[in-house]
Image (cartoon, rainbow, N blue to C red; front, side, top):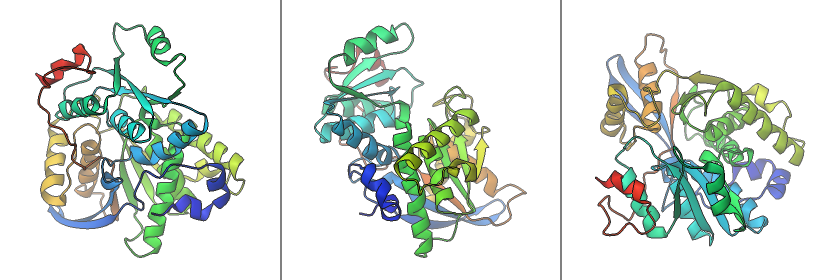
Amino acid sequence: MTDSLAARYPLLADRLQKQAFADLPTPVSTVRFDTSKGARSVLIKHDDVSNPHYGGNKIRKLEYIFHRADEHGARRIATFGAVGSNHALATAIFATASGFECTCFLAHQKRTPNIPKTLNMHRRIGTEIVRIGHGIDRLATLRRYLHGRRSWVVPLGGSSWLGTVGFVNAGLELANQVAAGDIPVPDRIYIANGTMGSSAGLALGLALAELPTELHAVRVVDSSFANPRSFARLMRKTTLMMNRLDPSIPDDLSDRTRLCWRNDFFAEGYAVSDPNTDAAVARARDDLGLSLETTYTGKAMTALLHDLESQEYSGENCLFWNTCNSRPLPVTGERPASADNIPDDFMSYFD
């Protein structure tokens, strides 16, 4: 296991420690395939295998967040998401494995194929699932389930400045793989942009490594959750906090980033797919050997494939950052015999 941020900035690593959840560096590969405009090569960063039991991008964030929670004597980890949230499930899995209790405040969403397995995994590990959203008094619910329980609250997607540091590390990790000759310098990186922590941290990490790479952040959530103003604010906050801990981190780091904000592949809603997204997921499976989903990574892949086949493409090295867990869950999607810890409202996702 390696930690690129710690190796380059030991003072920061000493003052900002983390748990060791992720198997780093995650591998990179190159895939060549045919398009309507000719053969193309795509670089792939495999964060889908970031942990042997449950991969994906959330692991990098949770390493820093959980260490801070443990330092402060927390006994319960609480977080938020939609009912099929990969972030909520990753948080619950690693909280349970780390000896924490876990509460996930979950809201209804459009049905997607992953939801039954996700709920059954929560059921298996004993997550305390609390429904929030329409018709629920949010403040009263939070008071009821958090007060007096030594809870450490993780924001949506783990996208605090602390979680964002996990992807600053990822940017430096990629730079090391370039330096080692594993892949050429990417001209563009495509990543699903949800609560912005992964993409904001990656943009900072690439700037810190002085790579001339443009990050294409493909928005997959409503603009009230992800927008350029909030993105810039998160980058500035992360830069400020890292610089306070280690003054060798440039205080203008967020101004050095190279970002292309992509709104054009949202498909009209969170977890809403369209024919282009469905086609991109199928293409990724058949031509790139990737198992993606339509909520996040499928939309980032749609953007990449669109650009590879556009008239403006002129041979740039493009890298796809696979943030989707590809480790199989040890559960089925069948309706359980008893709901147990699954709220009655969520049992309808098995129908």
